[in-house]
Length: 230
Ligand SMILES: [Zn+2]
Image 1 (tube, rainbow, N blue to C red):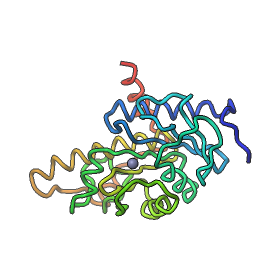
Image 2 (image 1 turned 120 degrees about the vertical axis):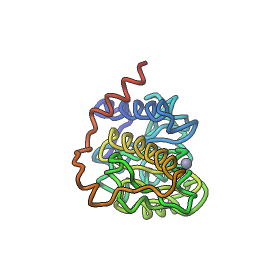
Image 3 (image 1 turned 45 degrees about the vertical axis):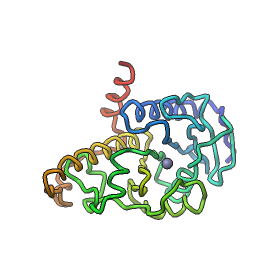
Image 4 (image 1 turned 135 degrees about the vertical axis):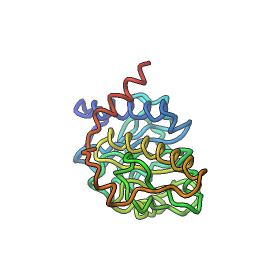
């Protein structure tokens, strides 16, 4: 299916993507680097921010690429690590959005011998066994590396990148953003807890007792948007 960057039907996804970038910046998860991708519905294509910091994202500074990295519209300069989005969208039809950050907390647990496991129900979207790890050091600038990262992610919601950060996926942009923020909270909490010894991590059975439909986390999204306006 041919897609156009300027199709008015895509305005909402582009605007939501920009808001999402501003939120991750405002919440201190991204810094000058990191990016969010959003699948173009019904096409083998996605939007992400051009080579710009998430906190400076605007609709005019988005770009549209296909899964081979061909430019389909918008700004000409994609982020260096565009294969993160391309390769995850290619292998995971259920994923509509990918956040890639250099979160302090994800980076910390990506290099520790201890797995980041769960000690709050904010982690319900994750496995009680902790997060998988993409081992290769360095940026994900090639399809080969992107494919290896997608393999490490598997069918899961998030993967840590060793000495680098994380990639978190969702069925909506709102969900991937909320999950990314919650992952950072879990990392911070686990770090604090470990200062006191081995925490009593939540078990899979305990996680089951928390019920939540997080496909569209309206309440969290509304809250993060309200903070942008302050
Ligand atoms: Zn990166």
